Length: 155
Image (cartoon, helix red, strand yellow):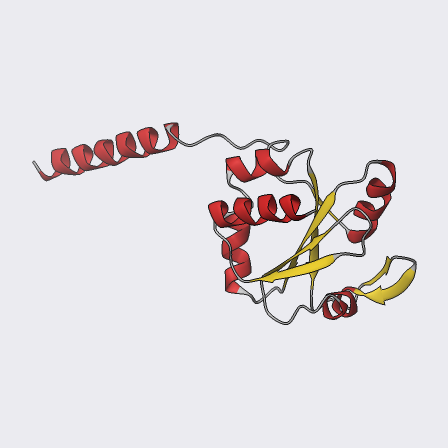
């Protein structure tokens, strides 16, 4: 009797999990945001100018991790970003040297020069790499899409 209840419970759980996963869009390797370094974005921007958004984060930032999972893996956001923006990840505490606009600096120095003081911060940058607009705070998928759309409308 107890054995039957356990088997029934396991079978029910299995069915629930199967149906729950059936409704989720399957993510493939090519079906996600293509994150670039700032140097890669600059090189691509010379050939094909686009708006660049930089996700400025730290390794310890909980909201940054939430944004990575909830926003940057959202199918609608991935589709919206793909082919329209260059997406850059920048660790605000990294001492890794980079070259930005011909100047050598660390990722940390670049984040500070862009007036980033909290995390996560999305830095919007136009094709000239000169008009820089930091937008601080966690953004869910709809807020993030609205932010990108508003930035493009102002240009």
